[in-house]
Length: 307
Image (cartoon, rainbow, N blue to C red; front, top):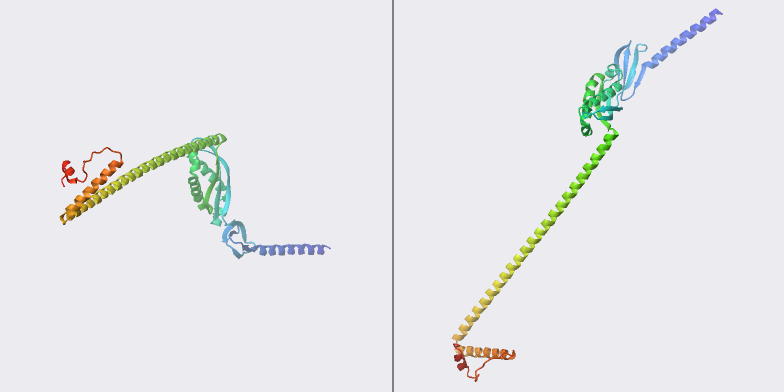
């Protein structure tokens, strides 16, 4: 009876030992995913870092103590109260983008690098905002972000992490300050609108005056060109008449020098004289005529016309 019990205990012992050995061998086989790193300790001391792929460890000697994710992480920084240089309380929150670049330092250099990064980002943000006025805090987001990244990367050298960027999500002042800022923005917007309207009206007046000025210049230039053209036309007319008159006189002189030219000229003068008397008579004008119209030479001599 006692031998049967001993055999059962012995069987349980060796079966459990075999099971432990099998489990140990199974746990010694490690498949590391991409963008992951396993920290292996041997007898409690850091031994090596396993990269992505298949790895076989020594059972009961090697142990995976830390698993680090190497992908870029997004860490929210909770809202916190900060005081600006002009003693205004604002609530600031943000987000950190970081990744593990040295798995061993991330495992042994700090207890929790995520918590440490959040705390350091908050303290750095408070110190930077404390050097800025309220208006500047909204304008200097890039400055605050760059300073936080610089400080975090200095600490990250011993933590095995790299901070890629830090973004401020919100800067929330008190409601009273928000109302004052909204009124200030509204007043500034109204001022710009008034200025824009005044500048537009000024430009419109300038454009109208310039238009009138150009219109007057164009009219004066048009009138000047009209008078110049009229003067040139009259000058051409006078020149043409004078040329025609000179030509006619020259031709008359030539005709008078010909035989019978003087008689023809006197005959033409008599004809013109009679036609003129006829026009005067038709116009109901009182005229004095000689008694004998046929005696042309006598009344020509009486009025002193040289034949």
